[in-house]
Image (cartoon, rainbow, N blue to C red; front, side, top):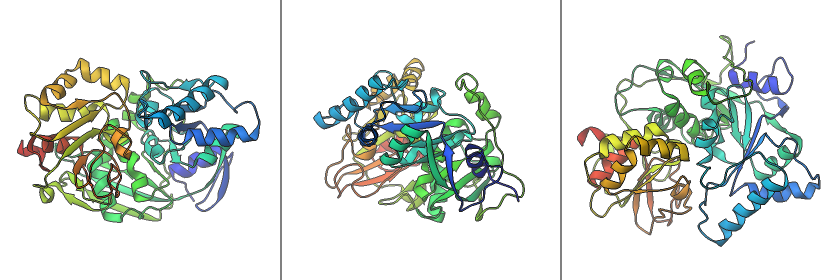
Length: 419
């Protein structure tokens, strides 16, 4: 019996030739990630072990991105814990302000993750790296602590769902819409503890930026991980980035799947998720006219250069709707710099947007865009739970960057072709 990509990666890291769904494995890890919310807890637990060293100084990545630049004294203390731990234990990959970015944009850009890797991160959107053909999943802070000590973690081999996307998407439709459409179909628990394997003609035609958006939101369907087989597009992306050996895996023709779901994206509109769940999805034409107080473009889902390009194309030469706040957050310093060199930042500022240094910021209700009672936002982020971006009586709608930019011009949710 054949294996899926996810099974093959777990088997290789457990020194097994074959594994089946449901088996418990102890696996070697390639990368362990923590941020300023989760790493301090892991560091406290690690310190209790009294080891005096981590298993590998080059396999741990620490990125203060959730409340950085420090928004208050507590967040400053969190970042200080990370900074001192990185210094005391010789952690090679610690990214401070000015060099850092939103973690799930930063690690692929820096070549720290690659095909065939097994990656855990104390952040649920660690599944982003599955876009490179890696097995990447979120864990708790105590699991991160144990992994920093041993370089290993245990896994229950997940069942897999194959999601096959057929057809050619229209101009304003991309990876964010593909994944929102699927979440709207199967629900926020439709892939609970399963590997979501994305494939089909429409996936093969997606850029890496769009693939990252898809894999990023596997967790919003309850997935253990999201994964896309590495191909020529993947190899072109990692060519000048990944500097250590990697392995490309493909699912076997006779691999076993719990479900196979097929979609035709030819007539798919941009998708908008209404409050208060990512599964509450509607075509943008059915969302038109909903008034807004704020629009956020960025995050680990849609803070990459193609996302900013889509927004800039719509905003160029136009002005943000009076009274609406448009906040734009490039995913990393490199993305910020490229956006500046290509004129996007000037476009945003002339349009009346506030452009931020890379940070998670308002996505998790952190800072730089918190909503007041009764306010409504449209965001390119990944979650719209009650109180996610501020007051529990505020509302968050989710969309792709083109819809977000168009809506910022009109003050209400608007299909991009209307502007």
